[in-house]
Amino acid sequence: MILQYLSIEFESEVKNTRKLLNAVPGKDLAYKPSEFSWTMGELAQHIATIYYWYVGALTQDVYDLATDHMERGDPNDIQATIDLFEKNVEKARIAIESLNEKKLLDDWTMKIGERVVIGPLQRGIVSRSFLFNHLYHHRGELIVYLRATGNKVPGLYGPTYEESNKK
Image (cartoon, rainbow, N blue to C red):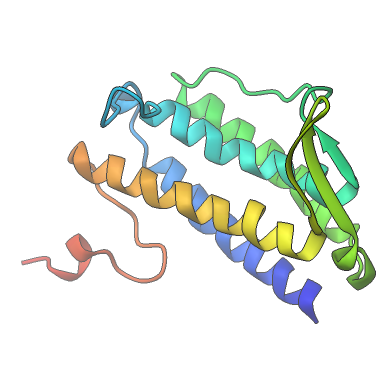
């Protein structure tokens, strides 16, 4: 049952992420709210990249970022980021389909070379925290970026404030 719920949530949230990425205008990709923040383009690209991490998190017991050659593309090209997102969603979907309930209990570790970054944690916990919740966190940031630049925010879980207060 847990896998069924994860799959349903994944598919629902892919639609929401797609709506959000499609709302990012090319004219505002260089916007960043502070000196140490990502640009809007970098943040959108990071969101697209999280879907790539599903493969390493769900199919490998130890995911070493130092040996992974992840494609990123140009953060100043929103269409390239959307294309990257779509490719990564397909890879993530296959990784989710490869799971079984027992694999959710297996320990998983992320490292960069010899340095452990996350874990060991059970894969089920990793899927919720590192994949799903991490994605939601950054989507929330992107919503703030969109509002700060005067752009329309799409409704993800119902109408947005702007949609519900139309005159």
